Image (cartoon, rainbow, N blue to C red; front, top):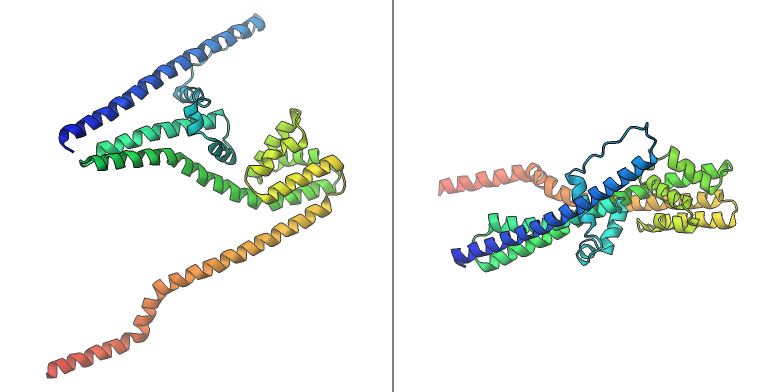
Length: 318
């Protein structure tokens, strides 16, 4: 590829990026005008319903973050938005606790911006000529920009999954304690949501969402569906199913919770033993790589020096 073709490719990429920026700016301006008109209408309605002596609130124009979120939210229901924020990605956002309009809008904006900017930066800084290299840079830049937000969210989701699994035994013990003093399921969950949110950071947040859905008129089974499926954990699903059965049929729940807690603790002990076994195998490799050279030098160093000196004397006599 000569210099002229390389320059044309860079200009084409720049023109495409400029066109996308112009379209985005136009849509953003349209969304901002619509939001401002709606805010004006709401302010007039509020001023009409407000007494004459009440102070008038000054509406603050949205900043650039709110504009980006508003612009991205308009694209979520389009085919492009459904492709960039698919059902799998929404489930991943659920696991991260940000599956709302703001979270989905920021995820869409991050994917769109990185998928456009990374190939452009790759062509500008790393292209050394040749159409094959240019195509590879564009492909890998687009793939990296598309997958990088998902990789970050997957790491966050895995961290929250581990934290939820660690908080589950404490949640079961609290349910046993509160059920033992005579509280109902609804009262027990309400106490856990309000009093133990600092120690149950992940599960407390999920229970708060379930309690909010239950207070809006959903059944206990419907409100606990997200709690039982969001982290793909069979133990959480079993706890949710047990709470639903107690809500429907009643009965003593202390003994089942006790047995369930003991089973979870035994499972955690087995998992810890498995991790210790794997760690022992890994440490064997580390010891071979680090300690074996030192052991050879200490134990065989004297013999090696004696052999080298004997060979040197033989060479000198010859």
